[in-house]
Image (cartoon, rainbow, N blue to C red):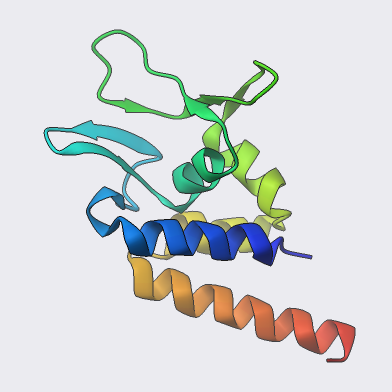
Length: 117
């Protein structure tokens, strides 16, 4: 089942920092700071640090609190406890904040039906 506590925390972080949200990149340096997609936000909200190579403007890597390196996509999928289909929807099919909100609401409704709530 999706970790909705973390997913909601990520959505709150994105909503509070909309200029730093961009679904096109896991994480990217811009003249205005770093932008991240939902997966990038997930790993940073969970405490991971982004890994930047010299002169690199985007990254797909992070390091967790124990110093282990991960691909952002894979680590976020595990943290959020997503199925491959859920990961595909949140990381590749949603282009903006509202689409992410709608996708998560659908997942919450489907989860509630599974547990009979």
